[in-house]
Image 1 (cartoon, rainbow, N blue to C red):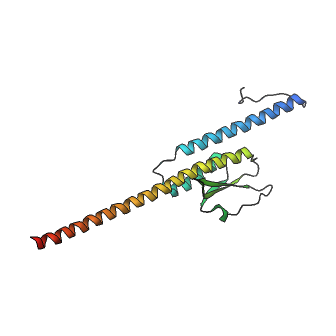
Image 2 (cartoon, rainbow, N blue to C red):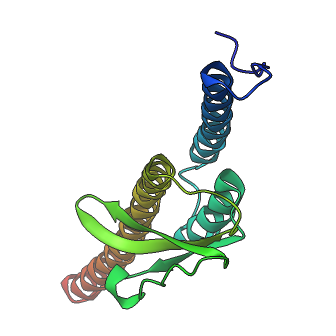
Image 3 (cartoon, helix red, strand yellow):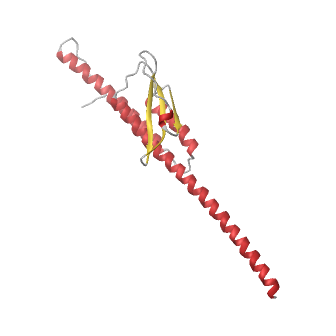
Length: 177
């Protein structure tokens, strides 16, 4: 049960191949667990005080770190405007995950993976999970900014109403006096 210690079996028989397969699977599991830990740490660091631009910038940085990418960026808007790149053997592999929040596509996370690294469907699932979690945080920041703007507008309208009522009250008091 100790996956950190590789199994050492000398030879080229079925048992040696089984041990080699076990070691590869254990290494993949270890790598994914590290990635998942970095993803969870990145998500935990999101704060309600973060604005949209900061979250978008941070998503690219966190994706680069969590998945050991060459680079990663977020393009906000319709994901269809960002064309999918073709995978060319021997060249860094393009990655992509649509950022969805509340049933709406708000952008796309794009990045590049070193050519020497394998990218499995489970890796893509983790990238899409990360993208959806960060999309929710970005969408919440957008909604929070919208509420803040509406709140400021309501406070300005309330102040204008008070000024108007003071003026009307003053103008009515003078003739009545």
